[in-house]
Amino acid sequence: MTAVESSLPNQVKLGTAVTAVFRRDLLLAYRHRGELVNPVLFFFLVSMLIPLGVSPNPEVLALLAPGIIWVMALLATLLSMDGLFRGDFDDGSLEQLVVSPHPMYLLVLAKVVVHWLVTGLPLTLVSPLLGLWMALPPDGFVALFLSLLIGTVTLSMIGAIGAGLTVALRKGGVLISLIIIPFYTPVLLFGTVAVSNAINGLPYAGLLAILGSFMALSMGLAPLATAGAIKISING
Amino acid sequence: MGWQWFHRLGSPRWFYEKTGPWVFWLGLAALILLAVGTLWGLGFAPVERLQGNSYRIIYIHLPLAFLSMAGYYIMAISGAIGLIWKMKLADMVMKSAAPIGAVLTFLALFTGAVWGKPTWGTWFEWRDPRIASTMLLFFLYLGVIALQASYQNQQMADRFSAILAIVGTVNIPIMYGSVYWWNSLHQGATIKFTGGTSMHPSMLYPLMVMIAGFYCFYAYALLKSVRAEVLHREYRTQWVKDLVSSNRAV
Amino acid sequence: MDFQFESFGEFLAMNGHGAYVWACFAVTFALMLYLAFAPDIRVRQFIRQQKRLERRMAAARSGELESG
Image 1 (spheres, rainbow over the protein chains, first blue to last red):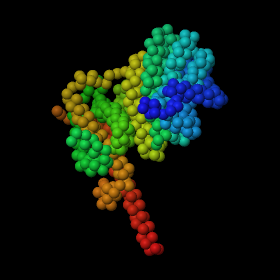
Image 2: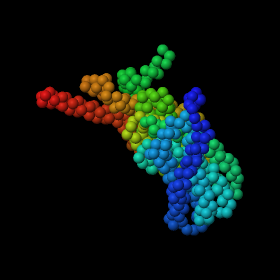
Image 3: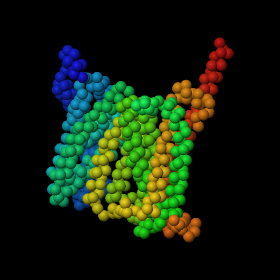
Image 4: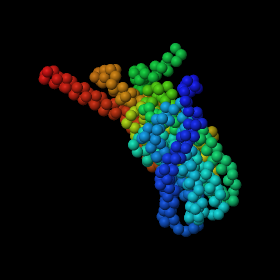
């Protein structure tokens, strides 16, 4: 790799390439800001079905709230996944990523971090509102916010594997959910228990630490699998 | 010698011709072991003190539970070999292992549920970590099968499902760990089936016969499935054409 | 090592657990039979398909000869 890099004139530096991908994706997201609202809207709309469909009783809602909010955040992330590489695949810019001399791991990581910034982060930011809606007990709010903040990073990282595996198909929608949901269960379990522990006055810092270790592990390994899947999608 | 056998294994033709005689002997071994184990387990092993005769389900449930897990690793490892060494045969093993593993995992869940009814009074119990984690394993298999089925291009299908299977192996310990931990918070229903090592030899020996029988059966089913896959994928080659016209394939 | 049941009827009944035990073994062995013989069916179909293809190719070839 280094031999090739030094032999090419006007070679783009690694740092420059990564920031370029990062800024480009952010800009693209900004240009399509109408779509940015969709996962958040979905988050609220589907959560609304719970009081309507199960029970409007605040006591029941308070019991369900940690799980419901976490499940909805998970589904909203999943729904946004299909679009992660789709546009880049169609217009050929994903191919540029594959032929670039830089390690794909970092370029993919940059793309997924942007995905988190425009889906996972907004979902986390509005989650306290949803907590109010769902009659979440006051002690749960901080834990909900923090667990989602850390957990949605992992959701984006793992979801990107599904997006990479299905980008060469015309429609990946349901398939992504089928293959990715089992991988989401550990995050969901630790996230909801962290919130319920906070509500019940039990310690939850350790659970956040475990969620943090999931995040580190997924950031370290998932982009490798995603990059592999993208390479196969491009090269056949 | 050395690595020659490994490269030969990459040749579907060599594999097909070499393993032809194995099919019969593996099938025979599976049949004998399963017949002996079933008769022994159902008729001659003593009745369990607490659960009565319903415990006899263990003679198929436990081997199925073993195989459901082993089958996933066989699938993932052959997927990895196919991905790294571009070995066609390994891809075929991976593709064939997925539905077999899924059926065996389903059976592990099914026999567990039927056993649960007389033992716990319920068909399904989320609070038992083994059930919840086997359920997850079943969905992992279905994911690999779904991904494999959604690509027309066989080579892409193989590579993608290999990646998914490998990611699965990284995740299985985490998933199992989480589910067991989570269940420990909801204690109450978990009942130990049998005391593991404390099982009396008169019950243990038929179980071991059954486990050996199920492993033979797995090898038999996988081998036959891979051989069928070889024919399908190599249909353009002369040796398959000769095989077809000489009626020696079945 | 003795047979644990007095009669074949008792063996089937298994003290009331017969339905559970026998259902498990029946479903398991049925699906195992399917796993064992599905490849054979697949190979038969494959051979039939290939032979049909061969015949059609041969017919096409002889047709070409006649017309040419």
